[in-house]
Length: 169
Length: 58
Image: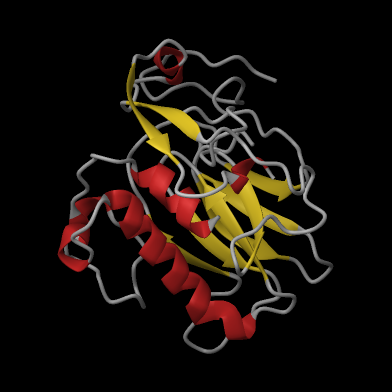
C-alpha cells in the first residue's frame, strides 16, 4: 500500500525537481533532485520513500499501524502513538510533496484519502472497506488550473498497480 | 476521502486522529478524522478557488 500510494501520487512519466520537495529534514535529500537518488521510474521512487519512512518509525509504533495522508500536493506519513523523542515533531513526519492533481473523489485512487495500513502495506483491520481492492489500472490527468476542469480533463496516461490496489480498503 | 492538502496529523491523548489541511482561498481546515467520511474537496468547501472561482458550500 505504501508503494502504491506514492507511485500514483508521483505518476509515471512526470518529472519532479528538488524545488517541489518539502519537509525532507531527517531524510538527507533536501536540495537534491529526486532522480539523483533513485534513477528509476517515479513509481519506484515513491516505493522507496514510503518504505524508508515506515521502517524508520516502526520501532515507535504503538500498534503497528501507519497513517498515509494523500493530497494533491502532499504525501504525509504519520503514526499512531508515536514516541516523540527530542528531535522529532510530535506525531507526524512529512515525507515529501509533489505538485500533481488527480481526482480526489475516486475511491480507486489514493489521492485525497487518508489510509490506515499495516506495516506490510495491507489495509488495517477496522477500516471501513477492509479487504476491498480497487481497479487494477487507473487514469491520470495533468494538473488542472481549477478543480472544475479536472472533472472533464483529458486522460493523458494510465497507471497500473504493481500488485493489488489496496487504496479502496 | 475529499482531502486537499493534508498536513500535520496527530493523535490526541484520547485517540482521535486530527489533521490540518491547506485549503483553497480562505479555507484552511482543522479536521477530526472519522472512518469513511467525505471531507469535500473538490466538490464542496467553505472557500473559493485562488483565482476567485466559487466552490459550492456544503
